[in-house]
Image (tube, rainbow, N blue to C red; front, side):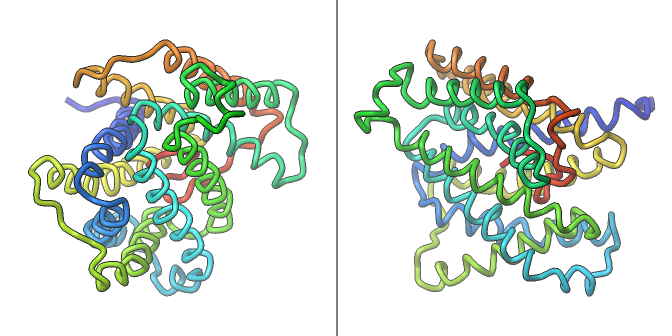
Length: 308
């Protein structure tokens, strides 16, 4: 039985977001035993080789042309592959995967507004309202509904680190727009290789350790395969048939899947997470005013807005 031409890309998008959601849930498991540095280094060291092979098979890129973009690729790798991962995995040492994904849900709105500023076009009132609504939602999540805690410096440090993560990812996404002529999977593979090289001195210095616990080992391997390879491949294949603006709306499923997976494993949602999540997702929908806010055509390796 053959799937309709329209159905297959949509299934790919759902699969990609499901795998990225797993990065939050399994990342929280891994950092119980290993450092964010170890997890980041091992993730990209394992993922780089299959990404290079898949890029060659699927895209057959001109690697010399890809290598000529190395200055920008290095910056992007430091931001998206290394910086974002370190922020997220450090945050997961202090907050839940649900909270992390809820804060991350603001990322599409932040990127859309960043794209508007980049082309010097003022965002619409609707987009501005959406951004403000999303910020309120993030504040509710971060403080557990006690927004006044921010003034007393009592906010959860993990949630604050996730705000740093989405800021880094925004710069990564917008910076990736200059690589429009480079095949996306090849670009991802090149950046993953750079990330592995950048993290190698930590391994030489003895700061990278392979976990000994079964749960952490499984978490590392799955993160290196599904979110790091599978999601990127599925996402970029889907973008051959689905416009980036439409595909971007699927990224909100990352939060949905993270909440569902966490709930199935016994995590109990609090009222602040529910209210904050609704506000964040509502803000994203408002920001998606395509007539006023240009949607970035390429997310660093993910080609849209926010992932993992």
